[in-house]
Structure formats: structure tokens, C-alpha cells
Image (cartoon, rainbow, N blue to C red; front, side, top):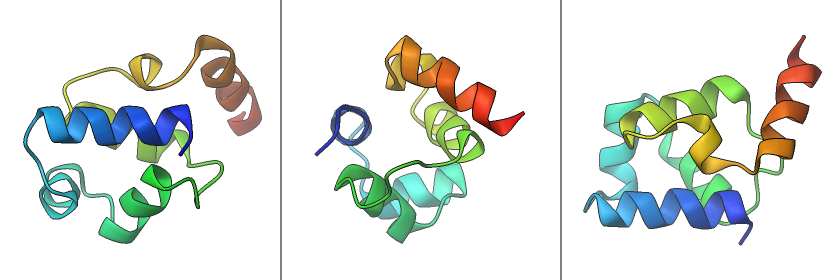
Length: 77
């Protein structure tokens, strides 16, 4: 599992949420969340991470190392 996947799973469990509940709150598909948590999704979109972060009451920066966050922002421009 990547740091990102670990962090999302950790926050989801801390909030006592299932993947299904996080999916319903965030609007992100259950399979996408599962793939991020298990590192099958290598480069999730910033929009997806923003939805997950909002549902978990954190920022995207809280989910990613700063260098990775900045790199993703540049790639989407």
C-alpha cells in the first residue's frame, strides 16, 4: 500500500466509515476508493482526492507529501 492509500484507509477507519459510506459521502466510486487504498490506482485525479479529502474532513495536502501534491497540480494544467 502506498502512503496515500494508507492515509485514506487510516482516516476512513478513524472516522468509522466503510468504503461504501465514504463512497456515498464523497461521490467517489467504491471500486476507485478500494483501488486507491490497495495501490492499484497509481495516479488518482486531483478532483477525486479533493472529494475524498472533503468527506474525510482533511485537505488534499494532508493526504499527500507536498512534492507529490505540487507535481499533480502541474500535470493537470
